[in-house]
Amino acid sequence: MNILVFIKQVADTEARILIKGDNRSLEIENKYNLNFFDEFAVEEAIRLKGKVKDSKISVCTYGGKKAVEALRTAIAMGVDQAYLIDNTDLDTDDPLITAKILAGFAKKEGFDLILCGRQAIDDENGNIGAMVAELLKIPHVTAITKLEVADDKKIIVESDIEGGKETKEVQLPALLTTQKGINEPRVPLITGVMKAMKANIPVVDPASLGLSRELLSRDASKIKILSYETPKGRPAVKMIEGETPEEKVKKLIKLLREEAKVL
Amino acid sequence: MSKDIFVFIEFKDGSIRKTSFELLSKGKELAEKLSSGLYAVMLGFDTKGLTEEIKPFADKIISVDEEALKEYRWDTYTDTMEYLIKKYSPYLVLGASTITGKDLFPRLAARLDAPIVSDAVGIEVSDGEIKIKKPIYGGKIISWVTTQNAPISIITFRPNSFSIEKRQINGEIIEERIEINMDSRVNAVKIDKGGSKKVDLQEADFIVCGGRGMKGPENFKVLEEIAEILGGRVGASRAVVDSKWRDYEDQIGKSGKTVSPKLYIGCGVSGALHHTMGMDTSKVIVAVNKDPNALIFQYADYGIVDDLFNILPALKEGLKSLKQEA
Ligand SMILES: Cc1cc2nc3c(=O)[nH]c(=O)nc-3n(C[C@H](O)[C@H](O)[C@H](O)COP(=O)(O)OP(=O)(O)OC[C@H]3O[C@@H](n4cnc5c(N)ncnc54)[C@H](O)[C@@H]3O)c2cc1C
Ligand SMILES: Cc1cc2nc3c(=O)[nH]c(=O)nc-3n(C[C@H](O)[C@H](O)[C@H](O)COP(=O)(O)OP(=O)(O)OC[C@H]3O[C@@H](n4cnc5c(N)ncnc54)[C@H](O)[C@@H]3O)c2cc1C
Image (tube, rainbow over the protein chains, first blue to last red):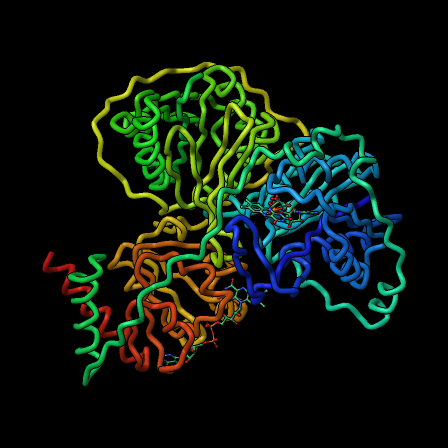
């Protein structure tokens, strides 16, 4: 089985993020990780390869040169091949453009199954998976928590639905996005890390993916950022004092009713 | 060019979801500013009764009542929405960033080659231009974005982003009959709707969240009781979910759900960044923790430093008598 995994390098949750003077761009502290939900996708691909004979796993990211680190993490975990689709000077605020580029790469590479994360934890869009599937005209399932292979043309997946779970049979080729709970991503072994350090990671030019020049131009974006701002902070906390728990609770309820007006 | 607005309606367990009424309320306000019409779009099967519930809130209600739409599927719903959008040419399509919304709208956006802004929390119109408010990086930054070069834009909003306004529009119902084909490449084999917990965590107005300080799964009973009195839901930190005291669907935070209830009460939650990113858009935050230096107090409006095992029973009784008075 030919498995393709999309991964994204994202700013660490703890990274400091500052708004630049123009209010239209951000300065992000140099602390990046492989996106939390993408670790599940990589792990699931590796487990699948263990179950299905003659499988091959490729990962790719559309990102800057720095994103090679995330690709090396995936190699250290156990994927066979990684590709960097270089977005230097091209990075876009429009997820549909990112999706078109990833779909273009998938078409060129060929695949039976595509795995990606449920959402990137920086923009929290959760758009890419379903978009790529639509562009490739293949079925998608979001937020899967279980994956089994029925035969070489069919898989069985369990996924989140409103308030519950659904099990579906899906014909390949298909795209799945991974949710927490599907597996426990492995921590790379030192031998894996060594291999990753040495791995050759080809750099792909987005212009080579059969996409129109207009699509790659800066004006193609249908999303425009107007400004960034820092969220309004809360006023300082009011600590509630009292002799007994009952007294504190009484004061709290009074404040919630009369001051905050939420009860 | 039309500036009409579509609101995609969701329902669950036989009633319209609260988030859909929120979107209809905001949608009407926008439609008035744009001098356009508000359409509620209702896909499903056997939805007559539900359609009636929507009438006061929209100028027109498009109802597609077909057996093939009984359960949500990306294929049938994307096809139907595409058909309706091409027929009515709305300017904005508004939906909720629920599990269904997150599955449907990106696919629909790619189908229509339309811009999408997901998981937004606000929208404004000035001089005919829309401005969408969207938190990024776990709420550390608020971005204001707009769409361009596009006749139609899709926006999904977090539940609890808008208040519900009572209206009496008594909109006209338009019944659309469409031939719908299911994609044979996907077959549902089992649907487990779960023990229907009354309120959806992301839609709840009141959330009582337990952290590791709750000490064990058995102690969540008092949180359940408080949630019940308030008509809300119990949430949990990741430490609690990882210890298997609660299910993952209860998890609030960066790797769980993002919630913005009217009132969040954190009990024995330390307030780690990964957790607060999922709840700091709550209107009012209360923290109960025995450690006066706990981080959560930096995010809270009201704090109580005490043993939660003393506070929670008192809180339950206090809220109970409040409810009896009312
Ligand atoms: C206000 C705003 C500001 C933005 N600013 C920037 C910015 O400065 N720089 C920037 O790069 N993007 C920025 N974006 C986002 C960007 O345009 C795309 O939305 C983004 O590349 C797609 O990722 P996502 O976060 O939407 O992914 P999601 O749809 O949430 O990701 C789902 C999954 O898709 C896969 N995936 C996502 N992106 C990639 C990728 N690039 N390569 C491979 N796999 C991927 C991963 O498996 C991921 O788990 C911004 C978006 C908005 C709304
Ligand atoms: C990639 C990543 C993603 C993550 N995602 C999430 C997420 O989505 N959600 C999330 O919650 N966490 C997440 N975390 C974990 C997060 O960093 C914290 O570890 C976690 O939130 C801690 O949970 P807690 O507050 O319940 O436990 P603790 O930090 O152990 O806090 C327990 C608190 O209870 C108090 N306490 C103890 N006993 C009592 C008592 N009797 N009365 C009153 N107070 C008492 C203590 O003072 C303490 O403050 C993530 C971490 C990582 C690395």
